[in-house]
Image (cartoon, rainbow, N blue to C red; front, side):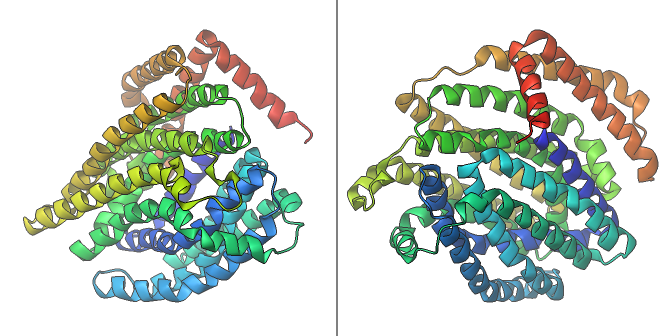
Length: 484
């Protein structure tokens, strides 16, 4: 339920931003978050071990939080240097990129608190996410819509939302932050940083695509198309929230039955969200900004790519969650090399390297042939999708070799059937409900009505034909009204 609300609030925020920023401004803003993520990679030194040790009952919370804060300030000078390089070779605004550096510390601190809470009380991470998403809306209305501060207003809005989110995260993490700073933990993490960084660098390689695209084309227009499309396709990402609790449960030696239950819930939310992203690709982009409406194919490609990526990440969590090589205080190098902590990361390295290499080659080649920016982004995203599928299949094969569990095929068929039902309803009713009007005040209510119909059809059908859905509804109601 929290994930569904976050989807809606996230889209409202994006709607405010894309409606007030011209593509050049939106493209510049879309560069800032990936740039920060390049340096957030150092956070992996603490993230990786924090979640594993907290889940196993070790008191490392305060040590990881303070260490992360210190490293965040050390990352700022490198961020500023990168901002200077990128702005010199593209149309990105240097002043705006520099101002974005105020987000670096809050990104770091929020990330480490998320990991502490994920290992401690995973359901609480959803609540802090909800607070963040909800706060973004009034702050964006104030600074972006009414004060018309452009990208500066977006950055201020995000900053305020993160500070409030961090306050909520600290409240939930209090039991794990009472211990003293322990330099021995930090020393151990730095000593074993090659393991944690090795597992994190594939994410860095993947995120370099936006920077290379900007440097190759010298334009942020394609980034604007990509980011607007990704805002819609990222609906599917929220289904991955289901898997947050799986990793710490496995670390705490939970039953493998959790894996089947997790996949069942993942399919329940992931399949309809994929369907919604696909059929609403054009009207949703039009709502964000009519200038992006022609990029609907990009949304569809990214939605499928995101769906397979979520499945890949879930399989990854299972494989490294069942590995116990780091239970020892000083695991041997040879044991670490043979562990899944290392082998799964190696697979991700291969996948990320192939993707980035192909992406750069394709963009350079097509850009030299004077392809339009829209076509460049289509081929770029198609490359990402084609790389994702075979590696998901390979990781699935590896998992089946090591873990015995039954995939919920019967439930998945039900969810696919219910999704196809609301897709059919969409094609029957959309021409009667949705009219493409420039005014967002006229267009948005029609879009929301159509979306509500599709969601209602899915929930009704699954409630009638699937017992697990009935149980899920009851558990959601109990969670909402629980006193804790």
